[in-house]
Amino acid sequence: MSNSSAMPYQAAAVSTLYVEHHRWLVSFLQRRLGDRDNAADLAHDTFERLMHGYPEHALQQPRAYLTTIAKNLVVSHFRHAQVERAYLDVLATHPEATAPSLEARALILETLDQLCRLIEKMQPRTRAIFLLAQLDGLSYPQIAQQLDLSLDVVKKAMSKALQQCYLVVYE
Picture 1: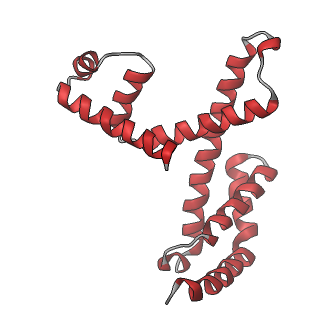
Picture 2 (picture 1 turned 180 degrees about the vertical axis):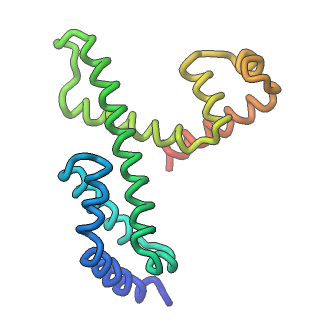
């Protein structure tokens, strides 16, 4: 089946899923979040993701598939809230005259959220090496010694991490 003929089918299938499972999904998310408005927003985002495509098996167990998408969105929601709280805490320590505009704050928070997503996608060892270099300012030999790795492993991991950063920025 070609993509052009699959789209109306997908839209119809998602529409059916929405009618049959939306109320349940909002309730599920409300229990997790404790807030009906955020639950409704994340339920909407869940179905929006389905509009971009889904595997054939998703329709065999729609609630399981919806739950998987929704849980990922909840994790992203909490991560975003945590980053926002940390940023606002730091901002509160600065004089009000130096505070960025609301627009600048929104852009900074979006950038921080993208950075968190990028770092979370890194393999654990690559992430640890990247953070030691970028946040703690350790040299590659210091990182190798601290993590008990060879210098070549540290260099390769940093190369991989920087490649991932490059792809996010320039693609």
